[in-house]
Image (cartoon, rainbow, N blue to C red; front, side, top):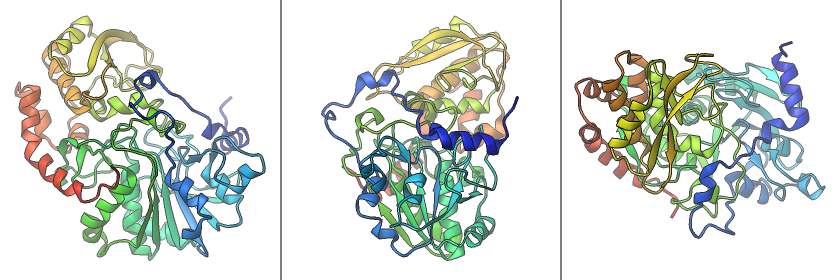
Length: 434
């Protein structure tokens, strides 16, 4: 029998399941050299350790989801023997030093019960009694009115990103910053690691003609920034044009994180940021293979390896062989057969391939995604674009039209090089970690 959303949320709150999905994945064997013994302290960890002084006397609302967790040792709750992995909303609600009065849920919801393209709506959180407001795909005055109705004077943002332009949480960040200006609210961003490192940005830069909720402003497909760095970039380059002035912004950075760190070097627990982002390995491939959402192939949703398994009816070993011939660095391709439990080709056995990243230091997810599109477009007679969605994901129609014209990976990458170079120069101003 199907459970109602409210009953399900109550069970999640009671069992702590929203904060318990901790995983490591095969990439853990490739831990960053020199990271052993080093422990990253998130923005929230540092905020709590400072007694929430940044929030003193404020009516606080927080934009977060199941990734907003902390380990024992940062709150009075842990001093009372309630350590482990806990959600920051539960921790702050129980702490008299902070006046938390509202929660704002993004795509998939605050407690994470909704699938892609969904949210939890407006409800009262069973665990804390706090009002939870739905921000998914809301922006401008509509979102500003939600902030006003909540009665908060300070909006805090704390969500784990995955480093790709089309992951919607960074645009929830942007939309909330713009709305905070319109509503006259103060804004605080708490930092978490970019799980696929903060190395150089790569991929096409969004053309504003293709602006949407999977890309509001011109940043690179793999941006190589943390959410604090993105917030600084947004506030310096984009928010004033959208809202008339920058938002009153304060940030709390991490300690112990370096730009070369993958997630397994941080010592932090991995909580899936969305239902189809189960491991850091998924995030590593996602910046390139999410482009397959804009085609008629399965991007692996409904399998245990989304964005690493790709396929369709009529595909076989020839695709993996063709992809291997490209000589793309850091990745192997294996023929694979699978039956998605939902989404495209639900319940049907299809053929395709699986990505196996063997050297993260040289793996380029965007070029890999382009290479896979180039080869399958040439190989599979039934290939078709979902053109509007693909162009929004790529941030341009150039990638699609060049693939159709028979261009190769390097030629396509050359087409975005000039705009990418300009973005990299702008990006440098806002980087905050060594």
